[in-house]
Length: 309
Image 1 (cartoon, rainbow, N blue to C red):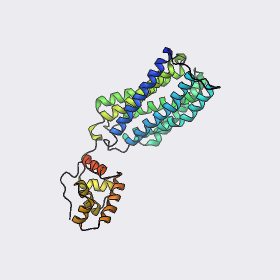
Image 2: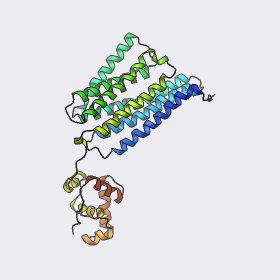
Image 3: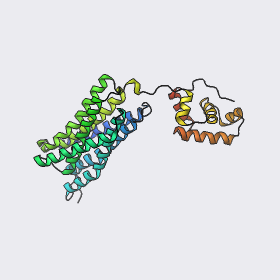
Image 4: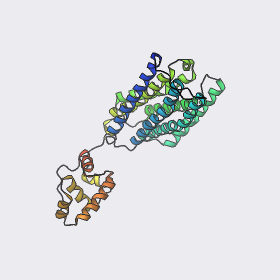
């Protein structure tokens, strides 16, 4: 039988934590989309995958377990919470892999050795915990926490030892500190802190806060070299594989001409203009003229380029 308990003052800290996590999630996603086109390095997509998958894990596994245990009376609620944790664990594992892939590619280091060393270190630490008999609640949380700690340690190592100027001096310190903090919070899983009434909600809040803050700081503090440089027309055309005829039509679109005006100026049919325009949209990953114009403007390539006849 499923029932809901009345929300009282004792539950207020939990709901405050949940609300803060929602706010952090919204802010983190906004920053990711804001900087999606502001980072020219191809590794940024892995940082996006990391944070999005981390959020999925957080709500699917962490918060579902907290809310089940605190506000629902279900037979074998602990087993249900454990099942949800097991189903959410792959999201955490993949997100951690994405984090290490991002850092490795950013520092121009081979990815495979980093992942292998992290996996081995996690296994050794996991076996040590079994040997020492540290107080834990369940194996799924233990494995996830061990992987998160070792991944954070590997990230810190890459940022400290890496020679690529990917961050400004101040930003580098903050990202390293936040990465370390994101790993250290998992140590509480192996201590008596888990008996604290609000441990789960506090942990979830810190989990969201440190990981999101790390990504946000990177986005705003990345070194100037990471920002895209203005492209020349030839560089833009080469990047997107645009042909000479398509370039003529692209100039017309940017100049605000209609398809018929472009056809008349280039002495081609209207259908040919439409066909070329469709291929340009596909190559530049946009859906319409407005998005193409915005992409060109942001790339700073066609300020006053006339259409060729």
